[in-house]
Image 1 (spheres, one colour):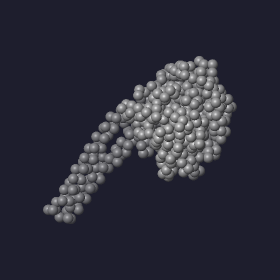
Image 2 (cartoon, rainbow, N blue to C red):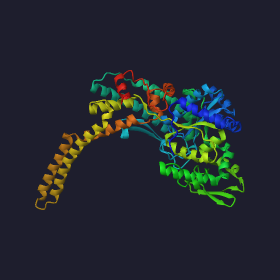
Image 3 (cartoon, one colour):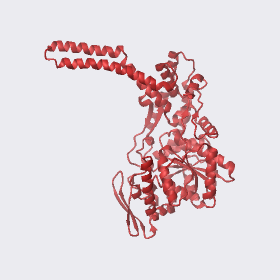
Image 4 (tube, rainbow, N blue to C red):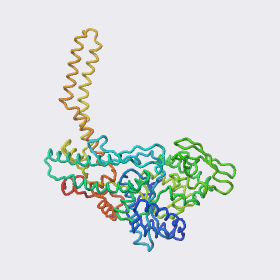
Length: 558
């Protein structure tokens, strides 16, 4: 399964999408399903208070059965990292490029996978760079019930929200103070103030507070933040919808999979075998024996249903992954399915989600994520074998290179420890430091062996043993402090953390504080419109660049 989800730039991607639309979708009319979807989209935006004039206009365009529809989707992660939010940016830029070439309306849809489980790490935590902390990151976390759907989970407590805000304010103060201290030690000129950074945090936090006020559950809290960034801060006309609501419009698409379950099962099995041989990962190993949707339990969790075929009947049986309640559901008898009776209690599985949306809505492009590449390849294989048109898929995950407060602190820390700004020398620096640490530990270990030998020496009196062991222990202690073993060990951790800080794909909070959301959007869009904009890393501008121009230049050249 070759990775065919990469494109050089917007022009190449737009051409491929237009070609797919003209050959596979132009003659079809998707207005019925899209009108049904429009109702759920409007409901989301009314409840999140992001029903802007541009969104209203886009909802009207959505009802056009021949409009070009671009789609992406993601779980409502906690303060999502850039890879989640840049999906909307790519769709926005692609939309403009397609409009230049086609005399048709173009709509961008963002599906919120609010029926996913709470178990995924990024649903309940977010990372912010910090060289001084364990693993080089400050982690904001929330405790969530296990094996529960996100839309059945309460939003964070007010106390948790306040704790996060105070933690971030303290992080800004600590990083700016650390930078000032490092600049003084290294005799580096550069002005840094915490106030502008704190102002940026306050601006972002107002969005958080507004989302919190509107949200009824954990999924909505995170989804509303995402929508407010995209629809209000960036003024996009992107349409959001909850999977828990809009998936019920796909009765015919679910029905198609049930009626053709034998063919579906066969192709899923083939996709699993191909995946194992090529890459590993992907869908559940018994996916081919599984009904193509989850069944929702009253406890707020879901049941995976295994398929059972008897003559002309199809039954799903399984237990809830949380409360273990047993389910046995008749899904089809003869050529008639019973999906209408349970449509509001099911949700598509990872491999079938794209199939039902693409078949039902006529999607011309799907923006995926790195974590979903294998699932999407498998879905594409199965869909095309079953006659379902599968649109171009693109994954855009560059590395954003920028000088934020945590990145600047990491670089100055590196300079202090190694005497250079050249981050490519980090491996050499760690090797040399490890050698020094090993030599010291070897000396201490030799003394430890002497102590053990002394303990087993029957010729030496107890009093002499105690005295000599104490002398050896004192010598070990003296070596540790004279040779600065604790400091060297700490320095090794810092060097490893420098690498983590500079390579991290951080929470959107880090961008909001160091760049500001509006400027971030402008820079992402500008980059996308360059030649090879989908393949190159980004060099972003922060307000620190002017204060530390020489360091910024070194960061870009790393």
